[in-house]
Amino acid sequence: MSSKDPLFEQFGKVIPKGQVIFNENDDGEKMFLIRKGKVRISKTFLSGDEELAGGKKLERELVILEHGDFFGEMSLLNKEPRAATAEALEESEVLEIDRSIFENMVKTNGNFALKIISKLCERVNNTDKIIAEILIHQKQRQIIAKLIDLESEYKNQIPVDSLNSVITLENKLTKEDIQNILYKLDKYSIIELNDPIINIVDIENLSRVKAFLEA
Image (cartoon, rainbow, N blue to C red; front, top):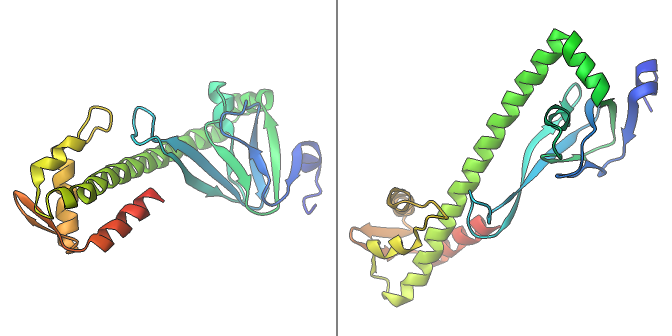
């Protein structure tokens, strides 16, 4: 242990590399301040939820935290289960701060309170971007999968309107989504878009794109 001081002796903990500090949905009674090491924060998104379609479990890294960063404060603020999973990427030294100490620091230390607010805003923004990325990938996957299914049915003379069948209330796809993705595929010469007909030029590459989006 490299941090031998009264503060660390009272509140410190050494986390071995690879150890999960807490899991998503765990009860949260403490927050953590990193003195040394790296901690990965990740969250699971379920594509069967209202916002996503396909029933697929998607784990995404939200952020990697280092010396001076803190995490786990959300459960202390809203008294709800952990919203993400925290894992030590290397042996790490952290200070554990329980609810009573946290609340006292927020009340008595204006700079600490402002830092908490700033970090919360940053993390919410980052999570929103990840959710948007997942939604885009889900839409691309569904449209590309439908194109592959329609290839043999229409002998590679696929009517653009035939893709409208993938639009449902649940997946929130729109005709504009379809057009945007078709334009991208046409740009990279994977399909040839001669509205109202689609010709698949490179079925192997189209299948590779689908596999990538499903990974």
